[in-house]
Length: 445
Image (cartoon, rainbow, N blue to C red; front, side, top):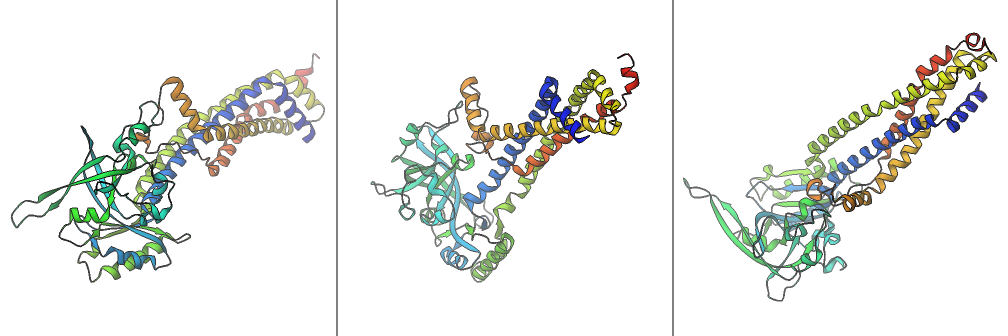
């Protein structure tokens, strides 16, 4: 039976054009699911990793209106532990940036340390001017006019083209060396019985570099200044301080254990310094996004379920094609049975035939799905050039590039489902073939 079964399967696969339709259906369905799962999973991973990449693995955040003074001591104590590789301080705020006549943008302001920050965040790769400099030489520049230097997100200075989603780099470079005015301030509690007052402060600085992280939230909203300047501006009567400590864990460190270590160091440091030490939030960036990531995974499951239902049409298509083959090859089946091939063996031949068609389609689908996933950015760019339609907007999807990594953990079950669907589609025709009676078919031959 094995020899006859494999021979018939090979013969039908080579000569039957209709069989190739079922192979193509399996291939397209598998490719659709692989591309969908890979792109969506890649997007979820990019969202999850971007926060850790740019913010660090663990954050210590002071409550609103409070600052962490002597933060350099805290950083030294954190870096002395085995769980922490590096840490850096940030003082955050908000304001309005005037970068030119009529160019006013609401921005988020970070006072940061350079080059210390580079041990926690890959800011070097994002800089336009200083990207090729050694790490120890990266800073805020030394403007000739004596002003302080500052770094500005590329999206703060310019807007990307609506069709290409690319920035006019000539326009962006024209801002280098220009003076920008930042209006910010701090809410101050008033006297007893009086309202909270807002104290406005103006910072003028020279744009010495432009930051392009590839993450829309950072590129379109952030301005970076020296932390000591921010501290003097927002808290002139207090010692220099920060409201966030961003921590990069050592390679291989367990996240939960590391958070516990950081919490212990924080309490030991803050016990005699701050009455509000228990109000500080200590969490990992992964935990911060856990709810959002969980919702994304739910959306992915719903999307795969819908596409999976659509792909179940494979079963109907294979059923129709194989049933037609059975109806047109009844004489061949009758001859095989007259030579002693049993009904179970005949049915097995057709189920095996369906499984082979499914396996071939799944293999082609894997190749097609991997090809589309790998070249998704050139494909998207080609669509944009030909039709003038920008499918992937960084302002909508947060990233300038579509994640294009194949999710191999899903490829295998998608292939298995494709083979199983084709085999199930061949089951009813197989039963019909098994019920063929040689005497009735060959009586007039």
